[in-house]
Amino acid sequence: MQLVVARIGRAHGIRGEVTVEVRTDEPELRLAPGAVLATDPASAGPLTIETGRVHSGRLLLRFEGVRDRNAAEALRNTLLIAEVDPDELPEGEDEYYDHQLIDLDVVTEDGVEVGRITEISHLPTQDLFVVERPDGTEVMIPFVEEIVTRIDLEQQRAVIDPPPGLIDDRAEIVSSRDEGA
Image (cartoon, rainbow, N blue to C red; front, top):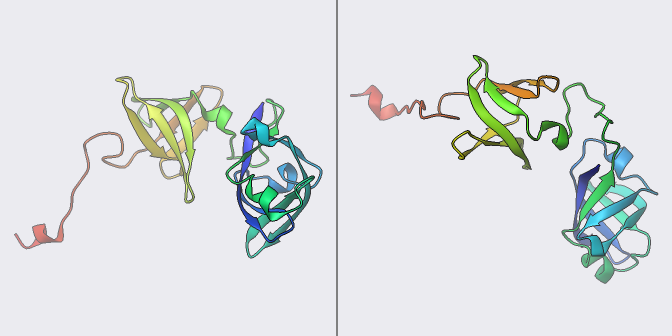
């Protein structure tokens, strides 16, 4: 099975290094020197990591055969993809790979069906479940423990405790102007 582990950013310097947006909780394992990664687009790879280092809080990588800024810049926005055993699980107890979460049924704490996870959206501040509802509409649910209270892989479901207005029209609108009325 293939997992996207990073996206190549801009070139850094003149010797072929690139910045990398890490998309894995295990960069020391997936983005280590010697790792061979598939790419999207496929025509850019496969790429073998020659060196890696952290500079000003960003991961910089150099790939075998990429020796100058122009070659590095040509890789910009390329996704790096690692081959992973489908039975392998993340190290952390409450960590999941996307493929484990896709197609889980989403239900509320009291058993009300919300829908099915069709996509995981990875944003800078948090991840979102994109959930297809039974009527075909979509709702986005933040993947945070205050809302997603339990992932049950055996039952193939995610249990949520949504705040008012997240999945329905029960939002409470409060205004300071209402206090004086």
